[in-house]
Amino acid sequence: MHMALADRLTAILLFLLGLALLAGGYTMDRLEIRQIHPASIPGLVPMILGVLLALCAVLLFRSSYKPEARNAELVLSGGSWARLGLTTAISTLYALGLVGWLPYAWATFVFATGFTLVFSFPVAGQRRAQLVAVAGALALGAGVALGTALLFEKLFLVRLP
Image 1 (tube, rainbow, N blue to C red):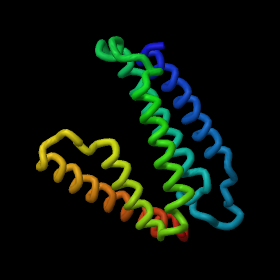
Image 2: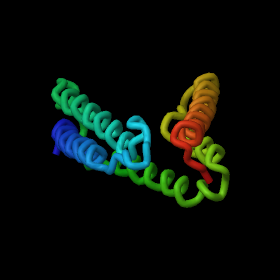
Image 3: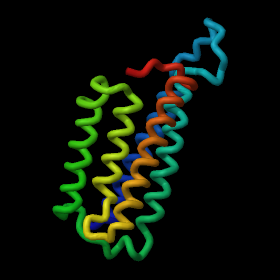
Image 4: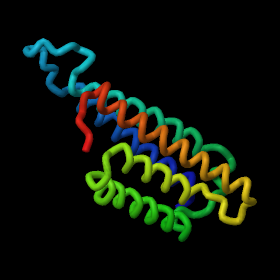
């Protein structure tokens, strides 16, 4: 199976998942009985995520027809599976280890910074490139941690651990 075919199949599955999120969010109870504002309906976030996921799926499907995608390496190459395993391990460590042990914002900062460094640090690069990578990872980690904490606490009114 070549990357282009894998991208097309993945795009179709993600598109269907996006449509399912959209339909599920739309059919959720509206809670008009409790005089809840229409913009705060429980299904609004799943509907938005469903539309965005379907849009990204369409973009992935379109990009799979570009000439460079046809000459890509096989999906089952060791590098691809190694990155998947590493991503799974880091994400599991974040969800089961860091969140709850550290405050949410700090756990997210450590996760986002570490994840970025693992996948973008130029090991064989020059010192300047390495410093830029570390600074970028720290900035990204701080932005993600602050942004998600504020989003959930201020906009969605969710108490974070």
